[in-house]
Image 1 (tube, rainbow, N blue to C red):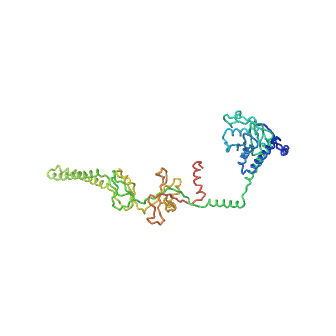
Image 2: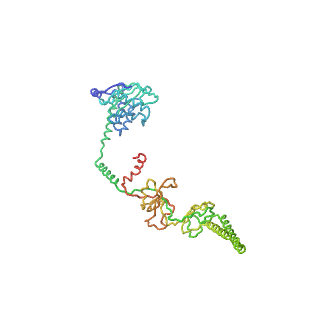
Image 3: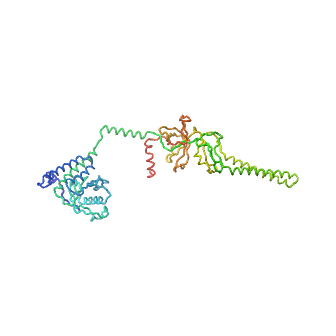
Length: 485
């Protein structure tokens, strides 16, 4: 409940300035002097406040050293919005470093102050320093205003509201009745706080740049505008790996079990060198049986031919025996071909690349399964996994620069040769355009070319575009994906 304690008017305002502040009875001059000293210290601290936050802290906390109270609360009023004046907002509370605007007490207090101010026109333009006494504050007996839910008992029952100007005000609460001396001291301090509050805000708003800084800002903005339209190449980064160009793939020619790989991994081999052998027990036996079957078919054919001279009926069986003999020879040749496939030989000179030799011993393989690769170290190319969002930059003969993880300070130039039409899944589980690039124009000797299997980051250059678009490209894409503009 709000009650008017004193309303300052132009006539009474001048008289108040002439009245002296009586702080203590005349019999206690020492206490009066101490209070005056403390008052001067508080005023000096307020005048030396660097910003409004520091001033609010002084107002709600240091004022207590002169006038005892339970709570000191600093309110501010926002600027006009949509033609309607906004209400008072709690900015600082004594003994609290941060104000929780969502707490029930703060919500209720703002609503209570704003309702009473609207009823009594506390924030009217007719008065700049109106002082109101608050009494019988009880949070358990509020009406249904939507600002508070629950039951809380406020410990202080008497308060004083002082509004030194249109933009700030203070509320002080305690249980004791307010006497005339305390009210005069609070009125004096609040007027000082209001003046300092306005002066700090005025200084911030009226701060101007020096001519030199103003000129620097002008040149800086002009430079940024020039940079924003400066043409640069659109680029993207993608993981890359050095792979062999046109390697010989050694794949399994049959379904079987690898017995042994005779050449260590990453070793040079000559053309015709033995690479691997299969377990050939079954195929060798099948070939031996096929030879015997072909011999039996040949003997039957010879016997039938001899019998045909004396028996005319056997002459008709010669054609059948010749067909059976031909079929037996085909089976023999087929078994021999499978037996030859149990040994794999190098078809060209190069570096044999495969995994651990022990992993292949006794390993079953199927037709077409890759076993090893023979590559030439001097004949390499670049494999790139380009991001799906940058597919428009993947043009044939596009410029590429490779930065290897093993040598990040140097770059290797390349030219884009091929790009997959559709994105494909990568070993990492992502979708990417698979592209290959040739290491052209580097003038590197064979021993200076990157090692097969080396990994790094490829920088792909696209068409020219303004620098501003290059900087804002990804934010624009993100905004369009979430907003749809």
